[in-house]
Image (cartoon, rainbow, N blue to C red; front, side, top):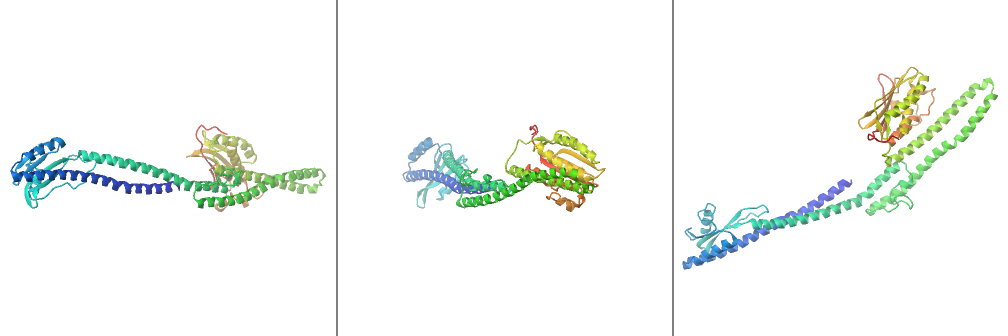
Length: 479
C-alpha cells in the first residue's frame, strides 16, 4: 500500500511540475526568439530608412559605411539593393545573387517583409534570414536583407532552460520528500496495525499489541497519522486487550488444568498399584483395565501440554524472526531412525532410512526431531505387522522435506482431510493407544517455522506424510 500511495503522490507531483515547467520552457524560448526578431527588425528598419534617404538624394555612401560598421561590430552580413535589385552595398561575403538571398530581395521589392517564425531552441545553430522593403507607404525604394546569427540567442535559451530545469529538479525533489513524508505519516500506522493484527491472530499477550497501548506496554507511544487512524488504533487496542486476555486465560486454563491433574493422577496410580497385592484373581482383569485407562489419561495430559506449548511457540514465531534456528535435517533423520528402529522391530515393522548429504533446515533439531517422532510413531503404530516404513530426508528446492511412507492400510480421502483435527482418530485405530493430537502438534510446530504438513495416499497402498520446512543458509550452526 505504501508503494501505491507514494507512486500516486509522486505521479501527481510530476504532472504538476511538468505542467509548470514545460510552458515556462516554451515561454523562455519564445521570449528570447522574439527579442532577436525585434532587435533585427529594428536594425532593418534603420537601414531601410537610410536606403530610402539615399534613393532620394542619390548618395549611398552613408548607408554603405553604416552597413560595413554594422557587420564589423556584430558579424552579421547585409545586402542592400535598389528598386531594380542591383546591389547598393554587400557585406560579410553575402551577395544579392545568392540562392538564399535573391528570393528575399524579390519579396522585399514587392513590399513584403520576411521574418523567421519558428521559435529557437538551445540546440538551434546557424542563422536566420530577415528582409524588409525600403520606402514609405506603397512606394518601394529598395530592399534590405540581413543574415542574423542565432548561436548567442540559443546559448541564452540554454542557460534559461538550465535554470528552469534546475528549479524544476529542486521542486521535484521537494515533492518527493513531501510524498514520502506524507506516505509514511498515513501508511506507517496502518503497517503497525497490520502487524498488531498478525500478533493478535497469533494469540500473543497484550504487551505485544499496537503502539498506543496502555503505559508500560511495548509501543506505548501514541500512534501518529490522521485522526481517523488514531481513533482506529485506540479502538483496536481496546479490542486487542480484551481478546488477548481471553485467549491467555483459555491457554492458562488448559495448561494449568493439565498440570494440576498430574498430582492427583500420580496419587491415584500409587493407590491403584498398592491395591494389586490385595486383589482376588477375579479382579485382575479390572485392575489391568484401570491401569490402561490411567496410561491413556496420562498420555492425553502430556499431549495437551505439548499442543499448548506448540501453539504458543507457533504464535511467537509468526511475528518474531528467529534467523539463528538451523539444523541438519539429514542428521536429525538418521538419528531418529537409530532410535526408532528397535521399536519398529518389536512391532514387526521394517524401518529403513534414506538421507543423502547435509540438508539445512530453518528450525531447531529438537523441533524437527519431535515432528519426526510423531510421524514415525503413527506409521509404526498403524501400519500393521509386516509393514515397511520408509523414512527419507531430502532438499526439494528451497525446502527441507522429511517424508515417512508406509504400506499399511492408509486413510481414505475424507479421512486425510480430517487427520490433523484435534482428538480425531480413524475407526481403523480401535484397539491402539493414542489421543488424536500427534498430527495437530506436528502441524503447529511446522506452521511456526513457515512450514507445512502434507498427507497423501501412497501407491499402491499406504500413507505418505511429508514435513516441509524452509531451508536454511548453508553453513548455519545447528541448534
